[in-house]
Image (tube, rainbow, N blue to C red; front, side, top):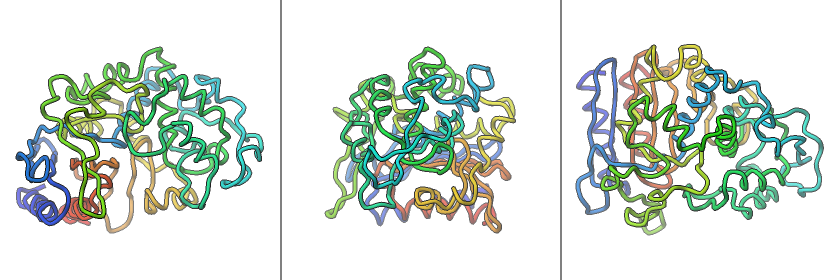
Amino acid sequence: MTSEQLADLLESVTQEIKSGDVPGAVLAVSSGSDQWLTAVGSEAPGGAELRTDAVFRISSMTKPLTAALTLKLAEEGVLALSDPVDRWIPELADRRVLRTLDGPLDDTVPAEQSATVEDLLLMRLGFGFAFEVEKCPVAERAIGDGLGMGPPLPSAIQHSPDEWIRRFAELPLMEQPGKHWRYELAYAVLGVLLARATSTPLPQLLSARVLKPLGMNDTGFTVPEQARDRLIPSYVGTEDGIALFDPVDGSDWLNPPVFPHAGGGLVSTATDYLRFARSLLDDGGLINAASRAAMTRDHLTAEQRNGPSAGIFLDGEGWGYGVQVRDQPGLPARYGWGGGLGTTWYSYPEHGVSAVLMTQHLPPSLPVLTAFTNSLDTALGG
Protein backbone atom coordinates (compact mmCIF):
# COMPACT_ATOMS: atom_id res chain seq x y z
CA MET A 1 0.00 0.00 0.00
CA THR A 2 1.19 3.50 -0.79
CA SER A 3 1.45 6.33 1.72
CA GLU A 4 -1.52 7.99 -0.01
CA GLN A 5 -3.65 4.87 0.41
CA LEU A 6 -2.72 4.62 4.07
CA ALA A 7 -3.60 8.29 4.54
CA ASP A 8 -7.01 7.66 2.94
CA LEU A 9 -7.56 4.69 5.26
CA LEU A 10 -6.73 6.77 8.30
CA GLU A 11 -8.89 9.67 7.16
CA SER A 12 -11.90 7.41 6.54
CA VAL A 13 -11.68 5.81 9.97
CA THR A 14 -10.96 9.15 11.67
CA GLN A 15 -14.10 10.75 10.24
CA GLU A 16 -16.25 7.93 11.62
CA ILE A 17 -14.54 8.08 15.00
CA LYS A 18 -15.24 11.82 15.21
CA SER A 19 -18.90 11.45 14.30
CA GLY A 20 -19.74 8.25 16.17
CA ASP A 21 -19.80 6.65 19.61
CA VAL A 22 -16.40 4.96 19.42
CA PRO A 23 -13.84 7.05 21.37
CA GLY A 24 -10.78 5.88 19.45
CA ALA A 25 -9.08 3.27 17.31
CA VAL A 26 -5.64 1.82 16.66
CA LEU A 27 -4.75 0.77 13.12
CA ALA A 28 -1.81 -1.43 12.14
CA VAL A 29 -0.95 -2.36 8.56
CA SER A 30 1.86 -4.40 7.06
CA SER A 31 2.61 -4.29 3.34
CA GLY A 32 5.52 -6.47 2.34
CA SER A 33 8.38 -5.52 4.66
CA ASP A 34 6.82 -2.18 5.62
CA GLN A 35 4.71 -1.65 8.73
CA TRP A 36 2.50 1.26 9.74
CA LEU A 37 0.94 1.90 13.15
CA THR A 38 -1.20 4.80 14.30
CA ALA A 39 -3.92 5.73 16.78
CA VAL A 40 -6.81 8.16 16.50
CA GLY A 41 -9.09 9.52 19.18
CA SER A 42 -9.07 8.81 22.89
CA GLU A 43 -9.19 5.75 25.12
CA ALA A 44 -12.40 7.00 26.75
CA PRO A 45 -14.87 9.79 25.96
CA GLY A 46 -13.09 13.00 26.91
CA GLY A 47 -10.16 10.94 28.17
CA ALA A 48 -6.48 10.63 27.42
CA GLU A 49 -5.19 10.28 23.88
CA LEU A 50 -5.26 6.66 22.75
CA ARG A 51 -1.85 4.99 22.67
CA THR A 52 -0.75 2.75 19.81
CA ASP A 53 0.26 0.08 22.34
CA ALA A 54 -3.13 0.06 24.09
CA VAL A 55 -4.44 -3.33 25.22
CA PHE A 56 -7.80 -4.46 23.80
CA ARG A 57 -10.18 -7.31 24.53
CA ILE A 58 -10.21 -9.14 21.19
CA SER A 59 -13.05 -11.64 21.89
CA SER A 60 -13.58 -13.78 18.75
CA MET A 61 -10.26 -12.80 17.21
CA THR A 62 -9.08 -15.49 19.64
CA LYS A 63 -10.44 -18.10 17.22
CA PRO A 64 -7.78 -17.73 14.50
CA LEU A 65 -5.03 -18.11 17.11
CA THR A 66 -6.70 -21.25 18.45
CA ALA A 67 -6.98 -22.59 14.91
CA ALA A 68 -3.28 -21.98 14.27
CA LEU A 69 -2.45 -23.75 17.54
CA THR A 70 -4.56 -26.73 16.46
CA LEU A 71 -2.79 -26.93 13.10
CA LYS A 72 0.60 -26.69 14.77
CA LEU A 73 -0.27 -29.62 17.03
CA ALA A 74 -1.47 -31.55 14.00
CA GLU A 75 1.88 -30.90 12.26
CA GLU A 76 3.62 -32.30 15.33
CA GLY A 77 1.47 -35.44 15.32
CA VAL A 78 -0.16 -34.68 18.67
CA LEU A 79 -3.58 -34.99 17.06
CA ALA A 80 -5.16 -35.32 13.63
CA LEU A 81 -7.93 -33.16 12.23
CA SER A 82 -9.80 -36.37 11.43
CA ASP A 83 -9.73 -37.51 15.07
CA PRO A 84 -13.20 -37.86 16.58
CA VAL A 85 -13.75 -35.38 19.37
CA ASP A 86 -14.63 -38.19 21.78
CA ARG A 87 -11.08 -39.59 21.48
CA TRP A 88 -10.03 -36.69 23.70
CA ILE A 89 -13.40 -35.91 25.30
CA PRO A 90 -15.14 -39.23 26.03
CA GLU A 91 -17.98 -37.34 27.70
CA LEU A 92 -19.13 -36.40 24.18
CA ALA A 93 -19.40 -39.96 22.84
CA ASP A 94 -22.78 -41.27 21.67
CA ARG A 95 -24.38 -37.89 21.10
CA ARG A 96 -28.12 -37.42 20.81
CA VAL A 97 -29.52 -34.84 18.36
CA LEU A 98 -32.77 -32.88 18.54
CA ARG A 99 -35.41 -33.79 16.01
CA THR A 100 -36.26 -30.10 15.68
CA LEU A 101 -34.31 -27.03 16.72
CA ASP A 102 -37.19 -25.69 18.80
CA GLY A 103 -38.22 -29.06 20.17
CA PRO A 104 -38.06 -30.45 23.73
CA LEU A 105 -34.73 -31.77 25.00
CA ASP A 106 -35.97 -35.36 25.19
CA ASP A 107 -37.17 -35.56 21.58
CA THR A 108 -33.95 -36.77 19.98
CA VAL A 109 -32.36 -39.22 17.56
CA PRO A 110 -28.87 -40.75 17.66
CA ALA A 111 -26.01 -38.79 16.08
CA GLU A 112 -25.14 -40.24 12.68
CA GLN A 113 -21.42 -39.67 13.23
CA SER A 114 -18.97 -38.24 15.73
CA ALA A 115 -17.81 -34.67 15.37
CA THR A 116 -14.13 -34.40 14.45
CA VAL A 117 -11.41 -31.92 15.34
CA GLU A 118 -11.92 -30.42 11.89
CA ASP A 119 -15.63 -30.02 12.58
CA LEU A 120 -14.73 -27.92 15.61
CA LEU A 121 -12.40 -25.74 13.52
CA LEU A 122 -15.15 -25.33 10.94
CA MET A 123 -17.88 -24.79 13.57
CA ARG A 124 -19.81 -27.83 12.39
CA LEU A 125 -20.19 -29.30 15.88
CA GLY A 126 -23.96 -28.93 15.77
CA PHE A 127 -24.45 -26.43 18.60
CA GLY A 128 -24.51 -22.65 18.90
CA PHE A 129 -26.73 -19.61 18.45
CA ALA A 130 -30.16 -20.46 17.01
CA PHE A 131 -31.39 -17.19 15.55
CA GLU A 132 -33.81 -18.80 13.11
CA VAL A 133 -36.30 -19.96 15.75
CA GLU A 134 -38.27 -17.86 18.21
CA LYS A 135 -37.69 -20.30 21.07
CA CYS A 136 -34.90 -22.85 21.47
CA PRO A 137 -35.14 -24.84 24.73
CA VAL A 138 -31.66 -26.38 24.43
CA ALA A 139 -30.08 -22.94 23.99
CA GLU A 140 -32.00 -21.66 26.98
CA ARG A 141 -30.73 -24.63 28.99
CA ALA A 142 -27.15 -23.89 27.90
CA ILE A 143 -27.54 -20.30 29.04
CA GLY A 144 -29.05 -21.41 32.31
CA ASP A 145 -26.19 -23.83 32.86
CA GLY A 146 -23.66 -21.02 32.49
CA LEU A 147 -22.01 -22.32 29.32
CA GLY A 148 -21.24 -18.85 28.05
CA MET A 149 -23.82 -18.06 25.37
CA GLY A 150 -23.99 -14.41 26.31
CA PRO A 151 -21.86 -11.26 26.60
CA PRO A 152 -18.14 -12.02 26.08
CA LEU A 153 -16.99 -11.67 29.69
CA PRO A 154 -14.64 -14.26 31.25
CA SER A 155 -16.67 -14.22 34.47
CA ALA A 156 -19.76 -15.36 32.54
CA ILE A 157 -18.44 -18.92 32.82
CA GLN A 158 -17.68 -20.06 36.34
CA HIS A 159 -17.02 -23.74 35.54
CA SER A 160 -13.67 -25.46 35.18
CA PRO A 161 -13.07 -26.99 31.72
CA ASP A 162 -13.96 -30.46 33.00
CA GLU A 163 -17.15 -29.23 34.63
CA TRP A 164 -18.05 -27.20 31.53
CA ILE A 165 -17.75 -30.31 29.38
CA ARG A 166 -19.74 -32.39 31.87
CA ARG A 167 -22.61 -29.90 31.70
CA PHE A 168 -22.41 -29.56 27.93
CA ALA A 169 -22.46 -33.35 27.56
CA GLU A 170 -25.85 -33.44 29.31
CA LEU A 171 -27.40 -31.54 26.40
CA PRO A 172 -28.42 -32.92 23.02
CA LEU A 173 -26.92 -31.35 19.92
CA MET A 174 -29.03 -28.99 17.86
CA GLU A 175 -28.25 -30.79 14.60
CA GLN A 176 -26.15 -33.59 13.17
CA PRO A 177 -22.36 -33.11 13.51
CA GLY A 178 -20.60 -32.05 10.33
CA LYS A 179 -23.77 -30.88 8.59
CA HIS A 180 -24.12 -27.16 9.26
CA TRP A 181 -22.03 -24.10 10.17
CA ARG A 182 -23.26 -22.70 13.47
CA TYR A 183 -21.67 -20.04 15.64
CA GLU A 184 -19.94 -20.62 18.13
CA LEU A 185 -19.61 -23.14 21.00
CA ALA A 186 -17.38 -25.40 18.91
CA TYR A 187 -14.32 -23.37 19.90
CA ALA A 188 -15.09 -23.69 23.60
CA VAL A 189 -15.06 -27.46 23.09
CA LEU A 190 -11.89 -27.20 20.99
CA GLY A 191 -10.04 -25.43 23.80
CA VAL A 192 -10.84 -28.26 26.21
CA LEU A 193 -9.75 -30.82 23.63
CA LEU A 194 -6.39 -29.14 22.98
CA ALA A 195 -5.62 -28.95 26.69
CA ARG A 196 -6.44 -32.63 27.17
CA ALA A 197 -4.51 -33.74 24.08
CA THR A 198 -1.36 -32.06 25.42
CA SER A 199 -2.00 -32.44 29.17
CA THR A 200 -1.40 -28.68 29.39
CA PRO A 201 -3.79 -25.92 30.50
CA LEU A 202 -4.87 -23.88 27.51
CA PRO A 203 -3.29 -20.54 28.58
CA GLN A 204 0.14 -22.14 29.01
CA LEU A 205 -0.26 -24.17 25.83
CA LEU A 206 -1.21 -21.20 23.66
CA SER A 207 1.58 -19.12 25.17
CA ALA A 208 4.28 -21.75 24.62
CA ARG A 209 3.27 -22.80 21.09
CA VAL A 210 1.95 -19.56 19.56
CA LEU A 211 2.34 -16.37 21.56
CA LYS A 212 5.97 -16.63 22.71
CA PRO A 213 7.32 -17.88 19.35
CA LEU A 214 5.71 -14.88 17.65
CA GLY A 215 6.79 -12.37 20.30
CA MET A 216 3.18 -11.61 21.26
CA ASN A 217 4.15 -10.58 24.77
CA ASP A 218 1.08 -8.40 25.41
CA THR A 219 -1.42 -11.13 24.52
CA GLY A 220 -3.06 -13.57 26.92
CA PHE A 221 -6.19 -14.71 28.71
CA THR A 222 -5.19 -12.27 31.46
CA VAL A 223 -3.73 -8.81 30.89
CA PRO A 224 0.04 -9.32 31.25
CA GLU A 225 1.57 -7.58 34.26
CA GLN A 226 3.73 -5.26 32.15
CA ALA A 227 0.70 -4.18 30.09
CA ARG A 228 -1.84 -3.40 32.80
CA ASP A 229 -1.34 0.35 32.59
CA ARG A 230 -2.21 0.14 28.87
CA LEU A 231 -5.60 -1.61 29.18
CA ILE A 232 -8.39 0.72 28.05
CA PRO A 233 -12.10 0.66 28.97
CA SER A 234 -14.65 -1.22 26.90
CA TYR A 235 -18.05 0.29 26.10
CA VAL A 236 -21.50 -0.93 25.08
CA GLY A 237 -24.02 0.93 22.97
CA THR A 238 -27.28 1.98 24.62
CA GLU A 239 -30.29 4.05 23.60
CA ASP A 240 -28.67 7.00 25.36
CA GLY A 241 -25.21 6.64 23.80
CA ILE A 242 -22.53 4.46 25.31
CA ALA A 243 -22.08 2.95 28.75
CA LEU A 244 -19.15 1.23 30.40
CA PHE A 245 -19.03 -2.51 29.62
CA ASP A 246 -15.74 -3.47 31.30
CA PRO A 247 -13.62 -0.97 33.25
CA VAL A 248 -9.86 -0.78 33.65
CA ASP A 249 -9.88 -1.01 37.44
CA GLY A 250 -11.57 -4.27 38.31
CA SER A 251 -11.60 -5.49 34.71
CA ASP A 252 -12.76 -9.05 34.10
CA TRP A 253 -9.44 -9.66 32.34
CA LEU A 254 -7.17 -8.86 35.31
CA ASN A 255 -7.51 -12.31 36.91
CA PRO A 256 -7.06 -15.76 35.36
CA PRO A 257 -10.40 -17.06 34.04
CA VAL A 258 -11.97 -20.16 35.54
CA PHE A 259 -12.71 -21.30 31.97
CA PRO A 260 -10.13 -20.07 29.42
CA HIS A 261 -12.33 -19.64 26.35
CA ALA A 262 -10.55 -20.64 23.13
CA GLY A 263 -13.21 -18.84 21.13
CA GLY A 264 -13.08 -15.44 22.74
CA GLY A 265 -11.00 -14.96 25.87
CA LEU A 266 -7.86 -13.06 24.85
CA VAL A 267 -6.56 -9.54 25.17
CA SER A 268 -3.96 -8.23 22.73
CA THR A 269 -2.53 -5.16 20.99
CA ALA A 270 -2.60 -4.12 17.36
CA THR A 271 1.14 -4.75 17.05
CA ASP A 272 0.92 -8.21 18.59
CA TYR A 273 -1.94 -9.27 16.37
CA LEU A 274 -0.18 -7.96 13.29
CA ARG A 275 2.72 -10.29 14.14
CA PHE A 276 0.32 -13.21 13.97
CA ALA A 277 -1.25 -11.98 10.73
CA ARG A 278 2.17 -11.60 9.10
CA SER A 279 3.16 -15.11 10.19
CA LEU A 280 0.36 -16.51 8.03
CA LEU A 281 1.78 -14.74 4.96
CA ASP A 282 5.44 -15.66 5.49
CA ASP A 283 7.23 -18.91 4.70
CA GLY A 284 8.93 -20.21 7.81
CA GLY A 285 6.22 -18.72 10.00
CA LEU A 286 4.33 -20.31 12.84
CA ILE A 287 2.75 -23.08 10.76
CA ASN A 288 3.92 -24.64 7.50
CA ALA A 289 2.75 -23.74 4.01
CA ALA A 290 0.29 -26.63 3.75
CA SER A 291 -1.33 -25.71 7.06
CA ARG A 292 -1.52 -22.04 6.08
CA ALA A 293 -3.17 -22.93 2.79
CA ALA A 294 -5.70 -25.18 4.52
CA MET A 295 -6.43 -22.61 7.21
CA THR A 296 -7.11 -19.79 4.77
CA ARG A 297 -9.29 -21.49 2.13
CA ASP A 298 -13.05 -22.01 2.21
CA HIS A 299 -14.12 -25.47 3.40
CA LEU A 300 -17.90 -24.96 3.38
CA THR A 301 -20.45 -26.22 0.92
CA ALA A 302 -22.79 -23.74 -0.76
CA GLU A 303 -25.59 -24.94 1.55
CA GLN A 304 -23.45 -24.38 4.65
CA ARG A 305 -22.36 -20.91 3.50
CA ASN A 306 -25.98 -19.87 3.15
CA GLY A 307 -27.39 -21.51 6.28
CA PRO A 308 -29.19 -19.41 8.91
CA SER A 309 -26.18 -18.89 11.19
CA ALA A 310 -23.67 -18.44 8.36
CA GLY A 311 -26.01 -16.02 6.61
CA ILE A 312 -25.81 -13.72 9.62
CA PHE A 313 -22.11 -14.01 10.41
CA LEU A 314 -20.52 -14.75 7.02
CA ASP A 315 -22.89 -12.91 4.68
CA GLY A 316 -22.41 -15.50 1.95
CA GLU A 317 -18.63 -15.73 2.28
CA GLY A 318 -16.68 -18.84 3.17
CA TRP A 319 -15.00 -20.18 6.30
CA GLY A 320 -11.58 -21.73 6.69
CA TYR A 321 -10.04 -22.81 9.99
CA GLY A 322 -10.92 -19.96 12.33
CA VAL A 323 -11.15 -17.35 9.56
CA GLN A 324 -13.73 -15.95 7.19
CA VAL A 325 -12.64 -16.32 3.57
CA ARG A 326 -13.63 -14.10 0.66
CA ASP A 327 -12.90 -15.17 -2.89
CA GLN A 328 -15.38 -13.33 -5.08
CA PRO A 329 -15.09 -11.80 -8.56
CA GLY A 330 -14.40 -8.08 -8.50
CA LEU A 331 -13.10 -8.01 -4.94
CA PRO A 332 -9.57 -8.64 -3.63
CA ALA A 333 -9.24 -12.06 -1.99
CA ARG A 334 -8.94 -11.84 1.77
CA TYR A 335 -9.29 -13.79 4.99
CA GLY A 336 -9.57 -12.78 8.64
CA TRP A 337 -12.06 -12.37 11.45
CA GLY A 338 -13.37 -9.87 13.95
CA GLY A 339 -14.34 -9.69 17.59
CA GLY A 340 -17.64 -8.69 19.14
CA LEU A 341 -16.02 -5.98 21.25
CA GLY A 342 -14.91 -4.00 18.20
CA THR A 343 -11.73 -5.53 16.76
CA THR A 344 -11.11 -6.72 13.19
CA TRP A 345 -8.31 -8.20 11.09
CA TYR A 346 -7.99 -9.02 7.40
CA SER A 347 -5.10 -10.23 5.27
CA TYR A 348 -4.94 -9.90 1.48
CA PRO A 349 -2.58 -12.69 0.40
CA GLU A 350 -2.29 -11.66 -3.24
CA HIS A 351 -1.01 -8.26 -2.12
CA GLY A 352 1.02 -9.33 0.92
CA VAL A 353 -1.03 -6.95 3.07
CA SER A 354 -2.41 -7.44 6.59
CA ALA A 355 -4.49 -4.84 8.42
CA VAL A 356 -5.71 -4.74 12.03
CA LEU A 357 -8.33 -2.40 13.52
CA MET A 358 -8.76 -2.18 17.29
CA THR A 359 -11.66 -0.43 19.03
CA GLN A 360 -13.59 -1.30 22.22
CA HIS A 361 -17.30 -1.07 21.59
CA LEU A 362 -20.07 -3.69 21.84
CA PRO A 363 -21.41 -4.24 19.24
CA PRO A 364 -18.67 -3.25 16.80
CA SER A 365 -19.35 0.09 15.12
CA LEU A 366 -20.57 -0.70 11.62
CA PRO A 367 -19.62 2.74 10.20
CA VAL A 368 -16.05 2.39 11.53
CA LEU A 369 -15.70 -1.18 10.26
CA THR A 370 -17.14 -0.25 6.87
CA ALA A 371 -14.76 2.70 6.54
CA PHE A 372 -11.87 0.37 7.36
CA THR A 373 -12.80 -2.45 4.99
CA ASN A 374 -13.98 -0.25 2.12
CA SER A 375 -10.75 1.73 2.20
CA LEU A 376 -8.72 -1.47 2.05
CA ASP A 377 -10.81 -2.87 -0.81
CA THR A 378 -10.46 0.37 -2.76
CA ALA A 379 -6.72 0.50 -2.22
CA LEU A 380 -6.22 -3.13 -3.22
CA GLY A 381 -8.39 -3.16 -6.29
CA GLY A 382 -11.92 -3.87 -5.11
